[in-house]
Length: 246
Ligand code: ADE
Image (cartoon, rainbow, N blue to C red; front, side, top):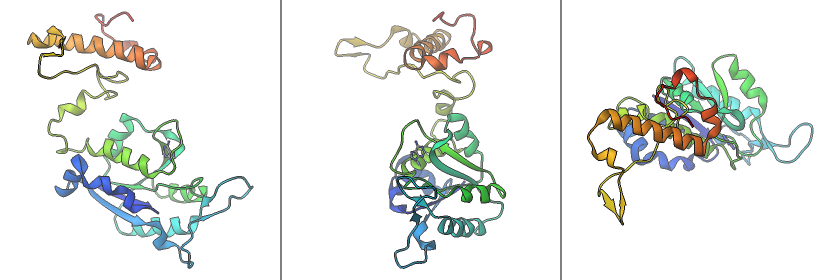
């Protein structure tokens, strides 16, 4: 998969050199290309922002450098990439969207600073490819760069060959299927007794059916406690008759 990122802080993406994503890049599974937006700003100060029309606080990112930068990235490949514009005003980034992105050959992220990018940029490229404004949560970051790191980490681990054990992604919280809209329950490893706290006996029993049942009950219990709105939205079709009455 190819991923391009246009930003005024390309150095912000140093974490993509390490861990799972760094390894995926070394192995050629993920091809990340960083671009400095200011390379397409032509005044002496390499200005990328201006005051908002209609007044108000803050600055808006100018369409000209973004347009030239995106044109240059699009010209470097064949079919245009899906464009992801991080903004707190976007649609929520979910595991489902991460899976959709993981199936794309090419993504372009356009993280903004200030109050965001002049809206005409999204309208312009929306006529040529899929452009989505996406939020990673109901809070406001200082810029979209951290949101891009979040999305790349979520997408990158879903790419074939990136996770050691492909089943790790199947059992994830939010993964479509049995775990859709359920949070993963607690996990344990050795030793069986730590400071007098014992691992639940069922996990040592070797009884796979009972362990699966216990894990599902724990997932339901944790979801009820931490995210009751998710539990309320569970499809009754997805519940089995043994599920706890919570
Ligand atoms: N930029 C600023 N806040 C953001 C958020 N919550 N999600 C995505 N991009 C952002």
